[in-house]
Length: 442
View 1 (spheres, rainbow, N blue to C red):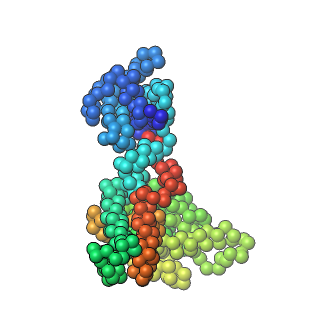
View 2 (cartoon, rainbow, N blue to C red):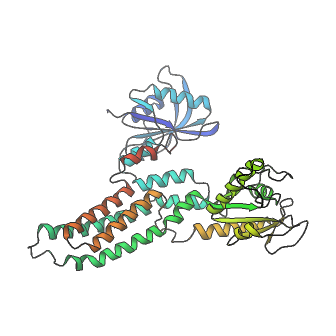
View 3 (spheres, helix red, strand yellow):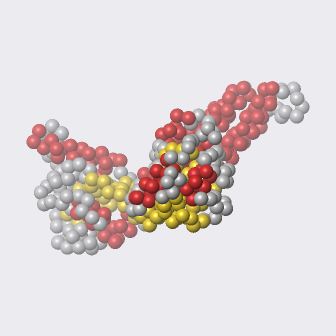
């Protein structure tokens, strides 16, 4: 009973048809009985009249649910109040809960942290839950659901169990070198399984770039000369006035970023400053334009795809833009004025050609971010990749070692690194940062 009972809204702030308030901890049942008058059967919704215990004032006519621990999300007793979503009703319920003994408002991510501490979720599943809450496209949600379902955690635990078996074999040769049931020739015994483990680690590492990029989104840099229509093209793709459009050359100075969902894939567009010759970093009269061009070139180097926009009425593309167009897409804008040029033709003014352009961008994003079996585990964070790099290095050193003591130590290092992925060891400094990413109420 020393642990605080926590409560918080589990739905977004603002007026809504329904708001959900979650309560977790040793006094969740007492709070439910005090406000709802009774504790309903487990996992069955009950319609009740909520009253403020302080003075008997009605709060709402609502639904309540009861999830006794350990069979709940957090592993503790959990109660949920499904109330009408007015600010007044929500405030009254939270005020009543705040007066319950040993109860307080939850901190961001505290429900998920209690689920992790109770063993309901491993750390990779917690990260999958955070990604699912933040998902903006079907592709991101599908990957997050796979991780929340334990695909990565199961793969890591299976690898870890195999590493531990090999470590036990190495330590048996150290401790019982003369026992008849301990196989000799440690190198011959471990060579094949170490090679198989290294191959599976390499396959997981190959998924890292795809998983991390799917979380971040496929990036497209929109490049071109001044007044080619880059900002107009961005606005047409975004379906809104995201960038200022002007006939004055050099209007766009900083990079404008827009996030889109194209074919279920997350795509980030970068509208950049126009590129032209004769503007140097040392030109004091063109300092802002030069800085904008420098940032445009940096985004061009960082982008997954370069979209070079050319004015169809003056369809020349040479020098720097010709080089940037290599392995990119050349788009001739203002095709209502002219039909020249070998590339995709669009008109930002009328929308002509944009269906084909969107389909091409979606296809490029899908080819880059997709692939792999639908249920295959995927690394989604830099820390996963770093841990597996440590595992691979330890396995390589174990394969080369001759003394069983060195083999056992490298296998211990590999098992420790695998444990970091699922939160079994060495993640204490990560937990506060990770759970702070969640909203209050999750």
